[in-house]
Length: 213
Image (cartoon, rainbow, N blue to C red; front, top):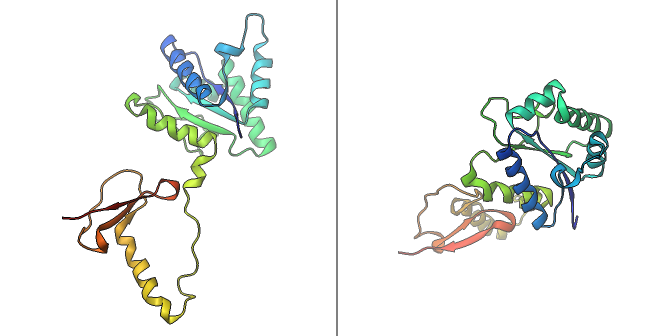
């Protein structure tokens, strides 16, 4: 998708919360995402329900900003958030759009992070403002489908080889001691083995490093 359309569903908890949602939508538009937001697209005299239904129908994805108030409204079916929740649930059931909704957690200190209808879904947690860039990059990758490219390709059966290839196979198998697919954290290894090589990350985010004394 060159410019994916994303409908942002949220509740007007406070001016601060509305400002945060506005910033997220603005950032998304600056990176080619056609963010649909009521603060831009809903004008005086517009039909609120028509705006919701049209936006949810036209969008490739829906971002549910799951604040504590939003979760409560969706579960109880109250207000605009409740109506949007009903439409989304109906869309999921009728069209089997299992990847249609992306929950985004914000301003939610309760143990109930997402509405009941979305409890089986993984969510992106934007609670910590210090992690905004990391979480935003994760969200952007999900919208563009880039997150699926991190999965390494399948190799061949390691046991369908000739005897002459067994030594190379043994070295490849042992080389797993000198690589980590994790995107963060720490590792321990001997830099005087494996020619001082150590590989970090996976897929498109693979980096080879060389170490010495």
